[in-house]
Image (cartoon, rainbow, N blue to C red; front, side, top):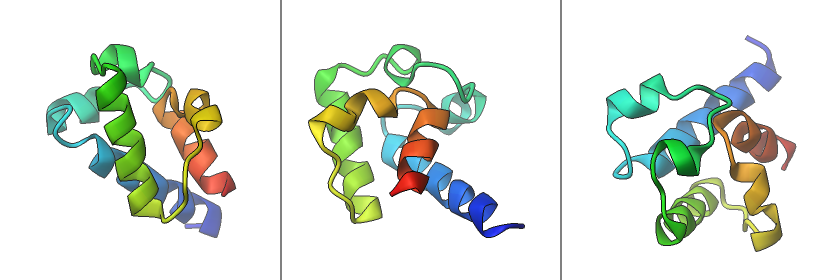
Length: 84
């Protein structure tokens, strides 16, 4: 496994951890990587903010409000996290 693939796997694991409690393991496992997270998991604005805060805490990087659109799907979240 390449370093980039390992980083993407770690990012995906952090995203799944941050989404726990908002969705069951089965729902998380069945999510398409390009599916809109807020729509698919019915996250309201408070839920989404909690997700962002958990993700920020897990990665040690502050996520600014202007970056929220980059957290729309699993793929875009992974791309965002691995770019930082």
